[in-house]
Image (tube, rainbow, N blue to C red):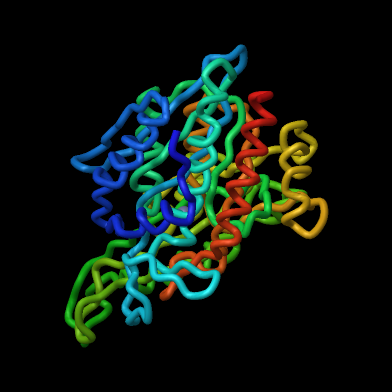
Length: 375
Ligand SMILES: [Zn+2]
């Protein structure tokens, strides 16, 4: 079995332009699938839309479910600022490999594929490994939602989400629920506001109502409090008219125990007296595993040498495919977010990943596979 060098694979993956939108992950997914098939994995491709390709690759048939490693192959756009490195060429400078998706999260995918391919010959008669590589994560976890919603996931017993954490194991993240709130009014000439009904004035009152909104949960012991932020506002077409429409979007970050459908109803009830309507536009559940979980403790053991001591229970600020995949696996499995990228560089101009961290991740993932599969 030819070994896969994770650094080289990361650079290969950067050459696929998977900027989302439009994503177009098929070529990248097929490239990885071919590699995994050659290593003895059973590979299945799943497209939620044309060329929006996720893949699941499985090896092993032991007495318990496999360990799952997951990552997304789409990336965010390049942004307006010019890059000083080619975002698709895998340029290296010292310990850094530059490129869109280097930190978030093609290096993480390269690391778990390198470990999974290297160990493949030992895994056939063990619980084995399930790799879930998704499309469309950056806009609402579309690939993961499709896999979970259509029952396309084989069971797994534990999950590593290789998003950028600089190899620190995080035991989850807040949920994310975005809402659009709309007010309507009646337009009239700006010189006669008494004839109209001003949608922006209504919206100003709605925003005041939102400021006083309290989530119906206590602060979470690890995640802290849920939050609400009004992120955008639009309304009115011209200065000399009474606006008949205004819209805001609201970003809430939730903790376990906050049901998003219920949250939507609560917000709708809060703003209904203003005549406003609420629609949920993005929905990603919170992800959390109790730090006392026995497998999480073993992950902490494995990470200690790279984390400068035994990890403390922490959750990460961004959200992942993890909650949707966990639902697809039936709900109760432990999960950690753990990967080589630098969290602060995700989505930035001149994004890069440390190659030393990529090597560390391969070591870590190898350790976790050996531990899970007893090989
Ligand atoms: Zn990501």
